[in-house]
Image (cartoon, rainbow, N blue to C red; front, side, top):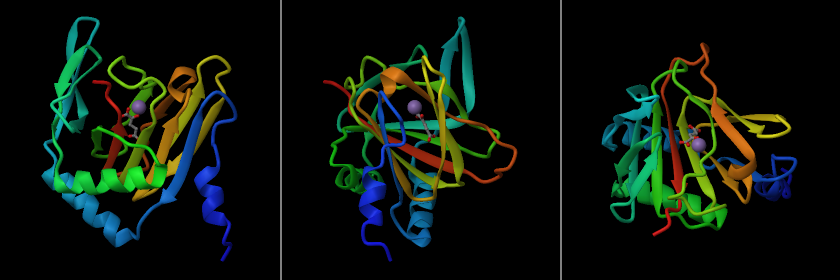
Length: 202
Ligand SMILES: O=C(O)CCC(=O)C(=O)O
Ligand SMILES: [Mn+2]
């Protein structure tokens, strides 16, 4: 076993410039990740996401949920959500993400993609409610999916696969300079749950 391998994975920046993305890989054995996946599928108050685009009220197939330390309000795509109080599993997962990344978070946006037909288009998470250049810790459970970054000016593209029970962190100037997306795929027929731990400014 390579003793230096873990440290290398912990500190390797996937972005070549103007941002920092660290992929920590799978943090737990598959059976433990399966238990979290089932708990999240059953205990989270999933709702179809809403957006108002060109004056039209749209509901996504993907489901979302929003949890936090307080009843934070979070506005994006012209809709406002109010955070629900943490569940026991979410507090455990927040502690894992905080311990690994050395960051602290006060809220979490969850996404449920039922199959590969559902994804998320190019965007960055730079809404004014979020701490500027704050870290976003992203835990994934369920189907493995490709995740991509694209630089806003150079259009350089970087992709990786997010594993079951894995952690990724985006920080520094990443949201200012890079877009990210979860591309849809015909190859995936199982659900994936993603948790993005964030810091809302109060
Ligand atoms: O599903 C993912 O891995 C990413 C989700 C995302 O980018 C977001 O919620 O802003
Ligand atoms: Mn995002």
